[in-house]
Length: 130
Image (cartoon, rainbow, N blue to C red; front, side):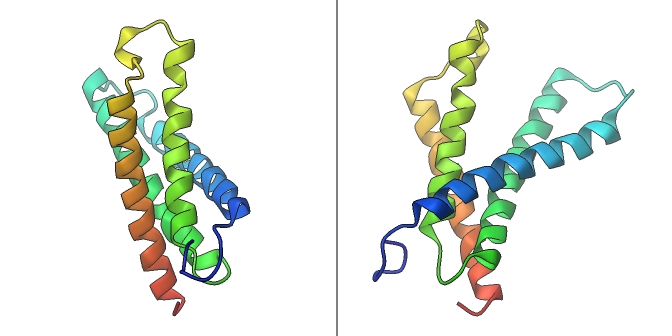
């Protein structure tokens, strides 16, 4: 239950998941345009991707906290964890061992995403007075 009196809204979990994906794609496209035709190292590229993911989870949680009706804290957090699971599906379709989907890594990534989205949703709910 998200607020102790009503069940989790799976609709808002789905909306949250989509918000995280769209936000990360949008931010990624914006940064890709900024870095176009520039030489950047592979490590810098990975750091930028990590930062974009973290900002997407925090910002997406904030967005859901602001636009959702009533108090919604767990829904964006669950949606963020689902987004991490989708990201780890890449390993099943990519033969590169760097992208290995280990349960421990997926759990840690999901927990970080859950926490960031939960905090973002909390801030968003406070901004709206909930």
